[in-house]
Image (cartoon, rainbow, N blue to C red):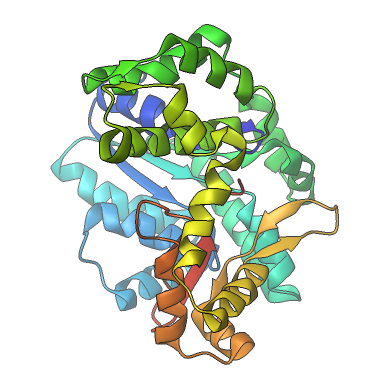
Length: 340
């Protein structure tokens, strides 16, 4: 599933395809699914092994994941199918794997220079391709990827052919669909939505990139301003003006995080966000996940200071960054939640 940044790829799968699978609408005679979601991240094969095992045992340990990963590297997809087949004997099901933000794999290769990064990326792609080729177990895979990375897939043998058989380009929403997106959620919660605000949002979203995440964020800010401050009884143009419109809402929200900081913390924030972003060799702006240990070395700050900064950009429904644990270490990965 490919599309531009902010076109709704992940939402299409998570809010559309996966509920349809669970409802039994897409695969004949089956509504029983094990559904795993992963991102390649800093360690594609480990994250893959973890995603599989957590569907079998949510309390799986890091040692069990590493042991399973070693088995996969020795035996290939046979190890995966045998593990799932044992579980399937007890209860019939299909397995669905979503590899979200597949383009992280190309960034992983860029960050992990040398043979190790390339070999791990190739192993990951080959594992996915082999799983889709085998017929002994119902294993379905969906990748989501920014469309500007599609040419990068040619470096993996067999991947372009697989994509050509199954590619779906996410279309842009038309005006009527966008209107439902804008007005629907507030109506579910009994709030009036000004027709003038709907028209303004419909027109303004055509003037920005990443329109869906920016629209989502602006709607959240409009709702919060109306409920907490304006209290006029309707979501209207005044609420929209006060949050800065679709072009400025994100920046104003981020500025509120900075307003709570002293000069030293602001400088530390700059260093962190410069580390979390990059431009690749093709001039594309990309997120660049960074380890906590790397941020500590880069900034000279301790972990508590860095976490305090990051929490400014997480709390109050900002969600600009997120943290993940790293395999079997005490380290953490810090990443920006969306390119927008």
